[in-house]
Image 1: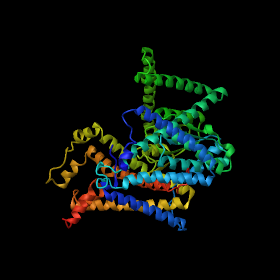
Image 2: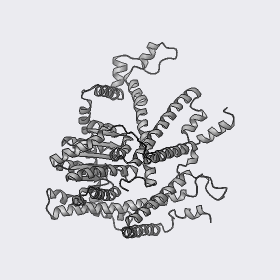
Image 3: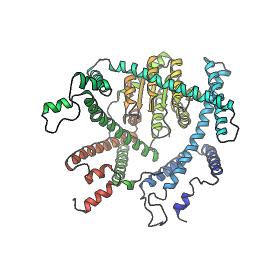
Image 4: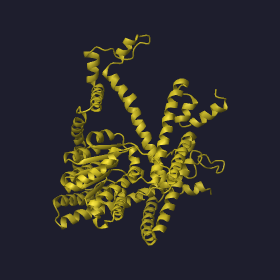
Length: 295
Length: 275
């Protein structure tokens, strides 16, 4: 059996996948919970050495998977030529990350509930909000779990359960989300008002450009340019003089499009390049444990 | 599921290798004592001013990494928050770190505890100051906005990855008169922060922050390496524009610069004597 076939077995099998998933979760929990006392018992230097080694090996796995050639059929004739022998292990590695995330979610929820329980017990300032949070938390969790279990046909889906879950989720949570989202429209207006106040040359250019783009991308821009001002629409004929060419490109929609594609897009791409390189440099520092911030 | 590999276009892999080399060489240079220069970033100079104002008013400082999931962005954001906490610890100013990601929450607790310890004030550490609110975008946004309003925060630091909720944080902070400094890698949110915050750290300045604040040789060297890599990207973009204008967008050199399978097309072109 080749190494690639051995690693491929790590992927979730269809048969008995619930048992497999439970075992993976339990195994990861035992590993993580078991690691904590081991790490605590080590001296600081030993702890750091262990973390540095694990970080380096984990990073090396992903780097090797990316850099190694994908076609290994010369060595392993039965292999898939579109991926190398490390590729099948990517998904299980990501599953482990998800499990760690799920464990952390439990930790976060515990912290949240503990804080609000303390607020209520000690009757701290505005403890009423904490009561609301705890009641909402317990109610939503109870009905969400029951609903999930009923979807898996592990409990009976009663009309009461269906109605209460619908009220809590569809008619409360989703609507509250929508309300928060719609607030952004008003915030955009107030923030834009402050940003566009003409206080400097830069603010004036910003305001003028924003006005052209805003009017240019809505039907009003086309109406002003082509109906009110009577500018010609579409590209200029090939042998047209410079004045005709100018008139064809002077409409607000054309100018707005030019600002978005010739000025805005390159600036955004430049920022993206910088962010990408910064992220890569940071990843290298973390991989080689050169970063001393929070690690 | 398909994954990207170096073999898709070896040129991209060579570029990644080159950037890595440049970053590592400059880290080594900095460690050997080379004097490296970083330009001034006003937003970062204002951090101490914002902390001072919070201390004078006796109102809390909020630190928000947004919905950032745990990764390089979160580590960078927490490094900045750790520095801010070390400054806060000197004046015993109250702080709140509010996150929407449970993994970031767990790491943040340790980072903030370390920051108070390193500042010599472990007694000031309060585990309840670091809060996981919700991983649901607008539930998190309403939680943050509510806390900013109720506690009338004096300074708000937003560093990390933000989405539509960015403006809710920034405008709420503005309403209570907080000094606001934001830095994000999400370029779609930059205009909102520029409009609503006092200082905004844009794009890769976010990754320069820890080097700027700590002046550690490793970070300074890495930053200089990043700048050289950016120069390489700029040269590639300009060369690409010139070559595509002269030779057309189907030229093997253009394919090499940016298309999957471009390496093979380029090698065939070279083997054919450039025809």
